[in-house]
Image 1 (tube, helix red, strand yellow):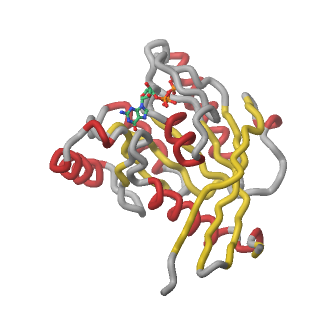
Image 2 (cartoon, rainbow, N blue to C red):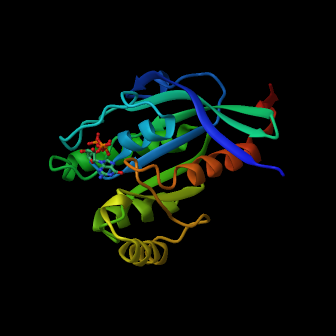
Length: 218
Ligand SMILES: Nc1nc2c(ncn2[C@@H]2O[C@H](COP(=O)(O)OP(=O)(O)OP(=O)(O)O)[C@@H](O)[C@H]2O)c(=O)[nH]1
């Protein structure tokens, strides 16, 4: 019987950028991660890549202030045959930390906006929200702002291990209702690995749909 076996392999930190001319130039599709500060972006990237220290995990909100690029490959194995797609994972600075008010907030929007608008290779934006807190004002603002762009959006609901089954389902429904996107919101736990395979599957399918030229079979 055919079995789908998908992984994100060979992850490496590549570079950090504060302006467009510092973005890497190799043509790879990009999957970006955005969310309120401390929502668990670094933990999610580490969990997706099975590498603890890849992205920094902080107790102090607002640590990620640059756009961080990681390289990796999406690999699917079906019945012993393996297909790979090189990608960039892009860790965007968190919004909503204490000092980000007024002028800082405008700078943040311009910074992220420049990235989103200038990157021709961005195929999926993952908006991370904390599953325990559906409908936070700042998440709503980010969602509304991102909907104005043409980039496919995947809502990823972090820290799902902190809720029981019925709370999880209730909050997931609420997030889907408040933030509808082309793909249903996904519950994720970096601690337990919940949602990981489904999210990597999503990456694979999005990348495959848009960037078939990069495909090579090994
Ligand atoms: N229980 C649990 N804790 C998590 C999970 N993901 C992240 N955390 C914790 O949440 C805190 C913030 O995680 P980070 O991954 O550093 O968050 P971030 O969004 O990258 O933070 P910034 O760099 O400030 O933007 C850390 O204490 C993590 O250990 C999860 O799935 N489950």
